[in-house]
Length: 150
View 1 (tube, rainbow, N blue to C red):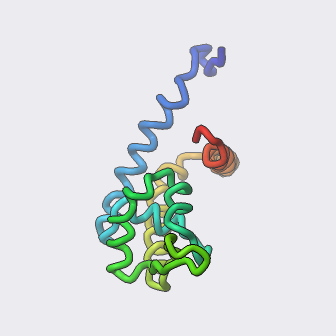
View 2 (cartoon, rainbow, N blue to C red):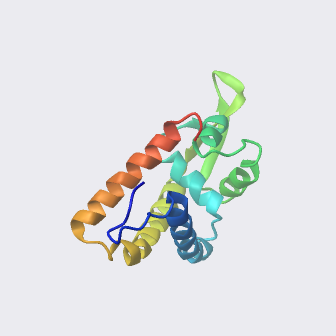
């Protein structure tokens, strides 16, 4: 059993991460609201990244969402000229997605504002602890995305 410096058992990971995640989500919501984005809209814009094209099915798998559930999100983003959908020339049943220049700009602005807000939390860590925390969190996050159970 792992113990803290006071020789008490450490809390489970979920007991530490879930309240922190909720606080982060609550801090992000005003930024998203100010830009007229839902959390799912921001997730989609972020997941499309710099890749020029991605199918709706691949996007849904990448963000762990049912592909039918994100259709309304895609409709909204497309109606705002933030992304475009077009038929895949190799499979006319599939739609290829790509961000428009405005979609990239909005994603970048929102990400920058969210990350500035995260400094409230990260600023409480010493530089070395901050680097270790971010590296460790990225390692675990990447492992979850690659895991068949994730």
